[in-house]
Each structure stands twice: as C-alpha cells, then as structure tokens.
Image 1: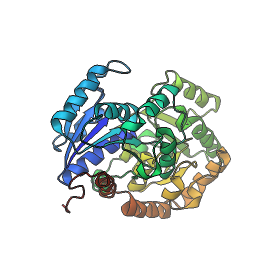
Image 2: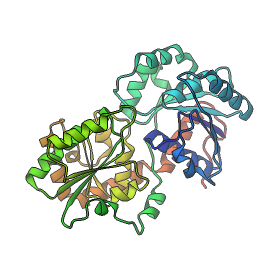
Image 3: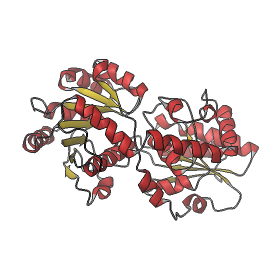
Length: 373
C-alpha cells in the first residue's frame, strides 16, 4: 500500500513526532510511505535518514500558496497513493484540496481537543468538509470535538492513540547520561520535569505556582522546563517575570528545546503536566515509557491513560496538584511500573500502526494489513 502523509512541517511538535514514528513503522511493515512537508521546517528530517521513507520538502511562502497546492496535486497524480492523510491544519486543508478528484480517499487528523478554533480555519473546514472522507483523532475526546469541527458523521471519525517505539527508548536509556542531574547537580534534590512548548495551552504559570507550594513544604524540589516559546513573542519573558514574582529563580530552569528529552525525563523523579487541553499527550507517553511517574491536570483521555486516580488532579488548584506530586513521589516506583505495563499493552508503535492500517482498510486501501514482519 502507498500512504501519502501531508504535514505542515517536520518540527519538534508531537504531531510531527507521530508522523515520523508511524511512517517508519509502516515502511517496516513493507508499505510505501511518502511525506509531503508544506514548509521547509524540517528539524526531524535526520530521523528519517536511511529508513526508506520518501520526503518531499516544499516551501509555503504565504498563508494560502497556490504553487504549493499545484505541486502537491501533481505529486498525488504521479505517485498514485492509496491513502492521503493530512496532519495539522495546513496539512488537513491542503490534502483536501489537492486530493479533490483523485482516486485515493483523503483522511485528516485531529491532534487536540476543546481548543478555540480561529474563525478563518473553521470556515475553511466547513467549506471543504465534502472533500474529506474521514478524520483520525488521537483521543476519544478529540474525536467528539472533531465531529463538530469538521461536520462529519460519527461513522467517519476514528480514534488511534499515539504510539511510541519502546525498543528505541530502551536502547537510548540502556547506559544513559543523567542530564536532569547535570541541570540541577546537588545531591538529595527532587526533580520535576515539564516538557511543553511555551504557550497558554500548557499553563506554565500553574506549574510555577505548584512549584512554589512544593518548595514552601520542602526546599529540595526543583523544576526543569523543556521547550521554548512559539508563535507568541514575549510569552517567555512573562513567564520569567512570574518566576521573579514567586521568588523561584534558584528552583526552576528553562532549558529550551533539547534532543535528549527522554534522557532528561528518565533522570527526573516526576513529569508534571498542567495543560488546559490536549489530545493524546506525547510527553506523558514518553515519560511512561521511560519509567518516570506522571502527575497531570485533567483533560481529554488522560484518566484512561494514567493507571492511578491519584495521578490526575480533579481541579486546577495548585495545592491539589502539589499534593498529587508529593503522593506520587512516594509511590513513584510502583506508578512507573504500572505506566510501563500500560504502554506495552496499549501504545506501542506497532499497535498504533496496526490501528491506523485498520482505518485505512475501512476506506478500501489495498493490502492494508501487512503480514507480520
């Protein structure tokens, strides 16, 4: 089977990570995969080197670039995919328009839930809804949100949870460095880690207030924030001002984007998530695979993912979250074991690819379920 994945770019976001992971797994299962990147933001391109995945990098110069749309349509006509699957808003819209009239079904992706959709994007989705054959969401909550947003019937909305390559994680962590201990090197510290792009959705201010509560009770707590600002100039400066206001400067470090995220997470004691809304959070999945206990606010499918109720706060109150952190710190070995078992049962790369292939088969894609490799 030939699968064309249309994505805005290949940056360090969670959707891009899943595109890379799924494309590699589909090739391993002897399918052909072509990734069409609409922009030349390709930080993850090296992860596909030598995998057999075909990558075409275009350069969208304006919000709606007819030249890119024509080139994508030519690629669809010449490569003749069995499925066209768009990711992220631009990937969704461009795959619909470029795939119009082609023989291949066009699927879109929904990677989030319960977010404010700009009016222009909502209008684009509504005007082109008849060009989309189905939507694949990465959470049950996101599937219901996608049904309303894309105006598509329930029978054409599918849920495929994110996956992770456990073999790759285990190899990376076989003899790992301990970067969290390099970031905060003193002995006897309790290291929290937060992996999130700096934007309001992730609610870093809440994480900082949680840290303030923890430090008031035990000065040994520290917070490592991985990620940087995107799309909102000055947002990081506002967060640093909040650090100053809460007098947390010695207790928190912002380390920007890193390529050693699994190692940072694995060498931390806990992962903290304070998001207002998410789909299936890659950061949580990675921590679960790495053996690091997770504490989270409540959103999307998180209660279906984390094994213990104590890991998910019922409210966005910093005291409740701080208490959850303290509770899970004391049980972190038990929590980590249960999380790893859950990933092995529900969220491996092979399980995610198999579920996606089953969706493709439901749209008539030939040889959708490959023989075991």
